[in-house]
Length: 133
Image 1 (cartoon, rainbow, N blue to C red):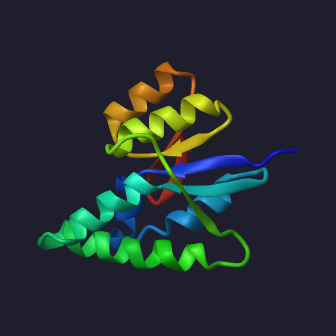
Image 2: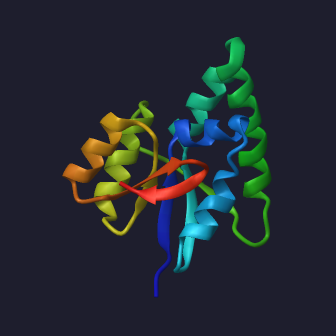
């Protein structure tokens, strides 16, 4: 059986700063083999946020450290893939449309609507747990 791809959006990664262990929550939710995916434009968005100031910059810096740690993980490494376009949301939609078996983890309501309209499964985080939208 092919592994499902779990694509992680920027805003989900920022939850680490609020004490949500996103990667553990995904592992707990998934009942089948999966690959964790970050799209290059999502990582670029984290880098842009990290250059700023305030809470978002601190959250983005923490997320970037954890993304790098997950890339090196032996059990469930995070894989980075190239997306089409500069905007993370557009790249996520394009990749998920190409692979309808993908799941996307996001808190972005607009992105959730776009993905659901394309028949893509969407996961969100509530009370530090993954739930399907």
